[in-house]
Amino acid sequence: MKIRCMIVDDEPLAQKVLEKYIASLPSLELTHICRNALEATSYLHEQVVNLIFLDIKMPGLSGMEFLKTLTNPPLVIITTAYSEYALEGYEYAVVDYLLKPIAFERFLKAVNRVQERIKRKDIDIKEKDKPKKDQDDVFTLKCGSDLHRIRLSDIKYIEGYGNFVKIHTLKKTILATAKMKVLEKELTKSHFVRVHKSYIVSLGKIERIKDDLIHIMDDTIPIGRFYKKGLEKIIPLYK
Image (tube, rainbow, N blue to C red; front, top):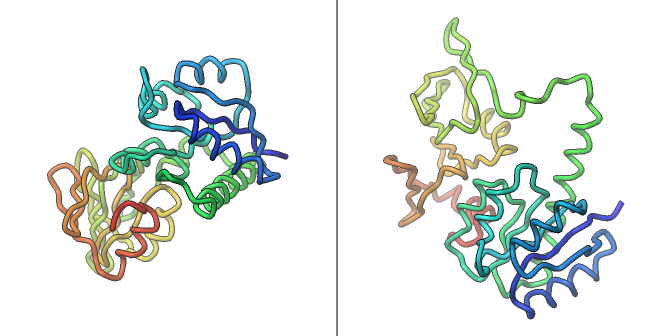
C-alpha cells in the first residue's frame, strides 16, 4: 500500500524539489500540494492523508500553529530553512526534521523512518487483546513495596543512582528501583534520549542546548562525550 502524502509549503522551488523526490519513490503517492496551512486544513477535512511534508514559515498560520489545530494529525516531516524549531517539533511527535536545501539521501532516511512508524502502528492495531489506550503513556516502577504509575508526558528527565533512579516530573520527583540501561531501552521508543551515563531526558521538554548543557525549565543536564554523537543523530542541528 502506498503512503498518501501532501506538501504544505509556500515556496515553489521547495515544492518542486519535494515533488521530484516523492515521484522517485514507488512507496509514496503525492495527493496534493498546499501553499498554506488553511488550504491544508480544508483538504484534510475531505481527503485521507498518511504523511505531511510541512514547512514552518508560511503566511498566515505557521506550520507549528497548524499542527496545534489538528486533533488526529497524520505523520509529519518538517521541511524548513530555519533551525530553531527542531526541538519544538519533537513536542508534536514529528517523525523527522529536514533542513533546506534537502539532500535526497536525507529525504530517503526520513521516509524510511515513516515506514518504520507505520509498520509498528500496524502491529499494534493487530494486537486487539491488549488494552493500549493508556498503556502507551504510562509505565510502572517499584520502590520498596510501593508501585509508582508515571505518565511519560509528565517526565522532564531521569537521573541515575546505581540501582535507583530519580524520576523528575513536572510536579514532583519520584525515587524508584530501576537501572538506567533498562529504562533507556524502554523509553527511547517514546521520544526520550540518554545524554549522559546518569541522565535520560524527554526530547519534548528540552528548551535549549548550549555549551554541552541541556536546559529544561530550571534544571541543567550535562551532555556526556560518549552520548553526544547519539544526540546529534536525533537532533541534527545540534553540533
